[in-house]
Image: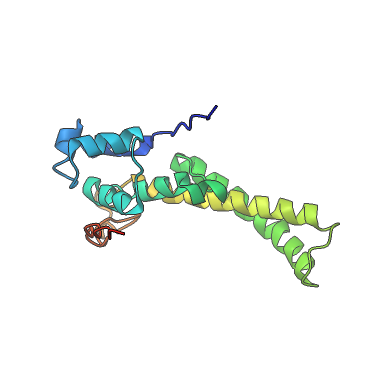
Length: 188
């Protein structure tokens, strides 16, 4: 008896489409070079979303966060434990401060002591693993802030009468390379 493999649909594509102002796949096909059927199949997870497709969607929808979300859900991202979480800016900032303090106080000194002889001994392994887990949490916290910036668009607004023009922030889709057509498959 064979096991059925169930694939989870990437919810970020539909969310990005709707946030970009495309209420249906037909209107979205005016912003990305895919038919409504292909967009639907990508959104439902019926066909894989290739990295090239992710670049097209990010540029077409003006949503750099698609790149980050895809990398967290791709097979490599899952294996290395890459995670991103939507967090409000105040919470993400406080979490970052806590993680940086934790890293600065103990992790750096611990890793320095372990690395002194260039070998992670059996008695050092639990402390080493705990330090690596803390660093992974720090990386996730940084990714959360990058995700926040990417979902906010590339313009940072300033209060009225604040002076200088807005600065460019976050992940911009403006400098992404144009989509390359797929290479024809060679027949055997």
